[in-house]
Length: 244
Image (cartoon, rainbow, N blue to C red; front, side):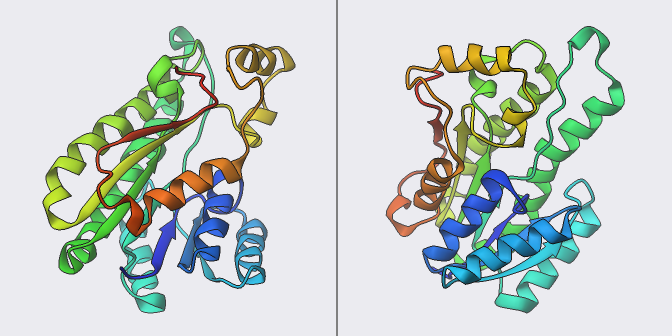
């Protein structure tokens, strides 16, 4: 399998940890990001500092034209990426009764439509090579729900359905499509919660703690590897037992 991977939302958090893990595993990592040039460069520096190869590419995953240009640039840099990690996402909490339609559109467009468009752009290269790995970063919220996160949960549940259906479409072509559902991970989203919200989720987690990004990244790296060639259409939870 080619050793080229594309990770969206790679400038921080889970995306950065995934880029670093894939880089340490020998992949050339294209790090997609939206706004923070300095953080994206820091991710690239971390991958290269660990002996890997990486480059940063700005992209708004809600824009189909930008995604096509992203894949063109990545192909020019390192060849067609046969590993795609759809990690770019947004989260804005709010009760359904008062949730802004604009915020709903932004959440669905980024978390679900963006993953769909990126997968669509990646598939021609994967189909030509008759091999590929797509890993969609969903959420434990897609499986258990959470008050105040109806839009976010809907977008991530849609990503699970997309994963299972696409896995059936392309599985005979040597391409696997899997979803990974993290629980509460030590990222910016967790930091934005109130102490009471964090405590309640930790109390509901059998592991009794938050997860860390490297634990999620290890699972993604497995799903991206040759060792996971018979894992297809799976929904893997990395949540300390939150959804058990």
